[in-house]
Image 1: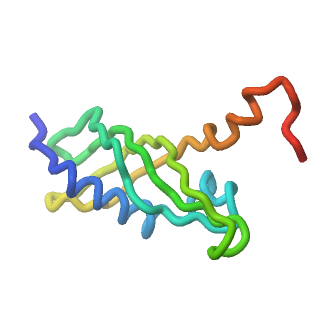
Image 2: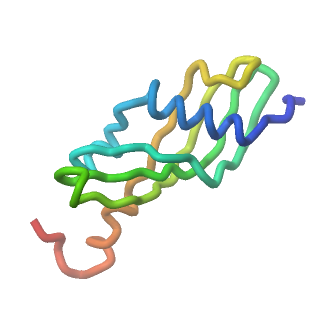
Length: 117
């Protein structure tokens, strides 16, 4: 049986990993001129084992900067899954964190009208 994980520490390690090791995120960078990852929420562990393999889901909150930071930005959040390997201290040594940005485009999909160009 895998040892119990510290969710707060894992959340911080995921944030660090996504900002420093997995950046840039093509899924996020295509949404705005600049994307700043702010925090991780709604962390759910699906599985973990004694070898440090951990899978689960979470939400990433981001700031999207469209032109310049002073007047054209917004915040949004997107679900993501993770498949990571952690060391004995809980630090992520490798992994994948694909982000689902489909909700960003959902407004255009909810109408019968084509998206504006």
